[in-house]
Length: 94
Image (cartoon, rainbow, N blue to C red; front, side):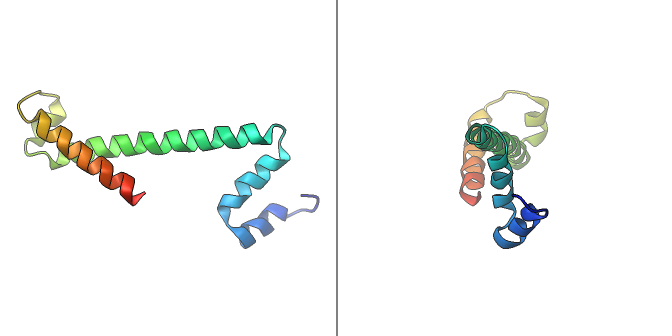
């Protein structure tokens, strides 16, 4: 990237995904930086998906007030099944 605006030109030609890797190519230890970036992006997605799955399964529960309060009852199995269903759905959509 010798000339100014190379990242902007790359953004217009290839899209936003290629800009971060072009930036990493200019940094020292670019392979390590790319690997760390991918791991952090993956962990971010997994954390968000887990939180969304938990919230959606509690909202879809027949006794959502008790589930949100943390009360354990006989519907724990049903909520776990609902969480698995929503987790698979979110994973399939992503």
